[in-house]
Image (cartoon, rainbow, N blue to C red; front, top):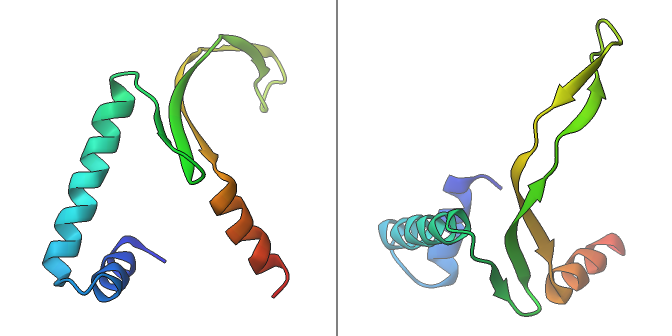
Length: 95
């Protein structure tokens, strides 16, 4: 499901106009980006957790020359699904 499909489905689900659904998704996205970029963790118990993690520099291999190269570290976003999402994904395996 792409963004446009999700907005339409959410509008139908929540009995909203499509433009209202789009505003909700946009504001939620902006809030998540702002919160994570400030270094805060978002944890909705049982649903998901989003946080950042510092990654150290590491040595990799250039696939063309097979010589070692340095891969710079930095920050990465970490998404951990909660028990509700895990259970929902498991239930689709049996279908």
